[in-house]
Amino acid sequence: MPFDALCKNKIFKDVPNYDDIQEDPYMKELFSSVFTGMSGRYTRMKIICAITEEPMNTLELSKKLELDYKTIQHNIKVLESNTLIVREGEGYGDLFFPSDLILSNLPTLYKVIRRVEEKLDKPEKKYID
Image (cartoon, rainbow, N blue to C red):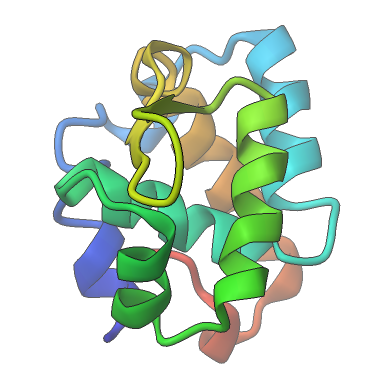
């Protein structure tokens, strides 16, 4: 599943023009550490994009993203500990949703990702188009 189609048309479709984005400094720091500074950053972004499209449990995410179940579990823990996703339910079938914190700060996330892409300058590592 191409990442561009998963993310660009789903969670960033209503983000204003890149140059007009006003960044929240606290959120910039948080997003930078979660989505750019640690291993698994691409996986975490893919999880956010997938659950924005449709809430899912860990197994569904594993299948949709074609990643190991344990990899998804680990990255969910990172996202939960940073209050970027919300869990509903108790047990194996818990569904995950993007938190209000991330949904209300999508422009800042978009700008953080764009800045990282410019530094990487590697087409195969692009988050969004």
